[in-house]
Structure formats: C-alpha cells, structure tokens
Image (tube, rainbow, N blue to C red):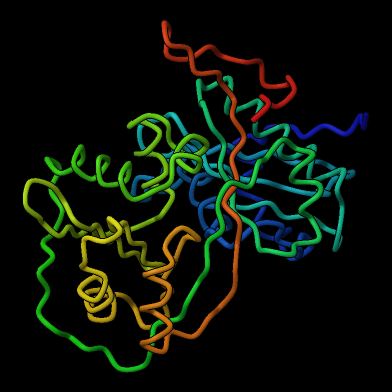
Length: 305
C-alpha cells in the first residue's frame, strides 16, 4: 500500500493556491466550479475580504516540496449528510497514487465532520476510472448531457415555482421516478436526498401539480438543468418547454439513464449530445435501523456495496 498521504490545507494555503493551479492542469472529475470555490472559501476563512456566504469546504493537498502534486476540494451539501468532490487536480496526465491519496484524505475529513456519503462525477472512459474505484467510489448512475437547441420556445408553462412546503412532495416524486437500486446508493433517506438535490447546483426550482401529488420537478442552474418526472404521468414536453424558455443558452440538460422517455423527447427536439458522465458515491457511514447511522473511521476500507 502506498505511503502517500494528502494533508488538509489551512485557509491561508487554500487562498494562495490560485497562482499554482496552472501547474495542476489535469482535472480528474467532471467540472464543478471547484477552482472558484477553492479560492473563495480560502479568502472567506481568512477574514481578509467580505464575500457572499460560501458552503463549508475541505481542501486537501499532496505536497511535492514547496509545490503540490495534487489538490482536491469538497463542499458540504444541504442537510450535512452528503459532501461533493467539486475539484480534483493533479500535475501529471495520470497519477493514480495521488488521486487515491487525495480522495482518501477527503473521506477522512468528511467522516470526522459526520458526513455519511461522499459524491463525485467523472467522464465516461476517463483514464482515472480505476483509481477512483480503488479509492472506494461506486458508479451507480449514468448521466447523459445534451446542449439546448437554438431558439427558445418561450411558451406559457403549467409549472409553478417550488415552495419550501413542496420538499416532502418532491422527495415522494423522487421515490416514484427513480429506480430503487439507484436510490439505495444515492439517497436512502430524505436528508441525503436534500444533499443530492443540492449537488444538482440549481438556483431555480419548478413543480408541476397533479391530482393529489406532483407530476414533475425541474431544477435550473447556471450550467445545467435537471428533471424528475413520474413515468407515464406526462409533462415531459412541458418540462422541456420550461427549460428552453428559462435555462441559459450555454446550459445543458442532464438526463439520467433511467429516463429513456425524456431522452427520446430531447432527441426528437434536436438536442445535441455533449457527453456522458458517471455519478459515484462512497459510503462513509452504515445505516442502522436503531441509531440511524454508525460512523466509520475515515481511514477504514470502503463499505461493501
């Protein structure tokens, strides 16, 4: 086993990393805006500038003399049960040893903060896939990305803005719309579902009412749009109309592999395919029917899936 270890960086170290990022030019995971978060969180922690509220973050690095062999950033997701790896950068085109050390360092830090699950996304066919698996991450869902077609439709929508009171109804929709195998790895509880929803990085949420429950949910952010929709309930065209009218032109529609009807509708409308990525998780705590969770030391082996 490698003796390489990743160390947590102080706020000052995190804030001064920006000049060195050009040396760490290999991004291992799908782009999640980690560089901006890294610098912002570092500056906010030092108190030398006033910035908008940033989420709790962890920054770890593998040092190489006075520079770094790799750096990784994770942010706390809503509810505190889940954390997301938002950036993992290394100085070589491939460095499995550093990747494993960085993710092990993040897992240990997250476990000490009572996190239950660590999530990350990476591109299909990535040369770093083997290292990510060795670090304990299990790929449980495929996400296909599509660019929005030219020319917004701007039609009136039957969707309404989601309210705080809709949270439980959105979770029930999630339980109906997403296969149990995915939910078991992704969000077995409503608290973890809040984390997954936060990882979608949406700034606006909309829901479509049905008789007695919600038929669909659409989340739109600066870069991506996500959809939850109950199969067979309709509403796919209305969801795509809303996305085309409201999402940024440079944004992407994210379609999970268990959403073939949504994928077919997007293809019929001429959404260009952009690529495929895998959603992964590493469980850091065991679900217990009596005590909800039992913490596992951060340097332990991954929990078998």
